View: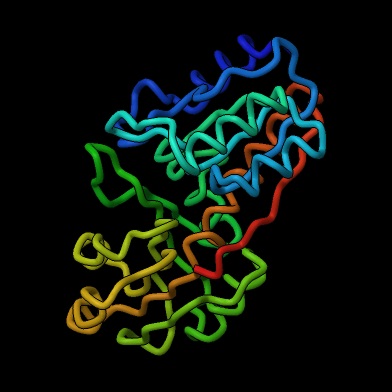
Length: 251
């Protein structure tokens, strides 16, 4: 498939031009004109790029790319990452927030599907868009049971669980990655349990004071879901060969 055609399709399908983001979403490093094999990873790291080149990928698609709001100098690790891609004739496509809340292949859509939530609805304003998805558990689950369901979904145990809400989770909001700063919007949206990626010291007491159960499934683990779902989508639609590069951070 032509790189330009694939990039155009991804830009439209993921609505990268419509969604405000600090990431410079889209094609970040140009690759070969023809794309037959795509590597997928959560992070645009040197390890990911070396692995992508070693397996013969023409393009690597990541959630966390190289270029964000401000211009960066191509020195140090950033230079070596770009050099690895260019020397290996491999392009780079990044998609951050548009992948978090895409209705079909998004991280949050996958979380609600894998956690078997019903009556799914959006919530949580961020960068002018509703980033989260939440729904209802029928029947409600003990928090430990929901933790086990999340572990099966991501393949990784949560990094932390804060049980300050009811014994059984019934209304669950999901935002992948580092979304603890949206705890107030989770509570105001009527959820009793929140599934996200990671937290920090600053938000410990807020969870308790809002009366929420919070399951921190890991930033990395909760954001493998969208790139895997996007890979399946491209395989089915264009018959492209894909490979997921598992490079966990433990966070």
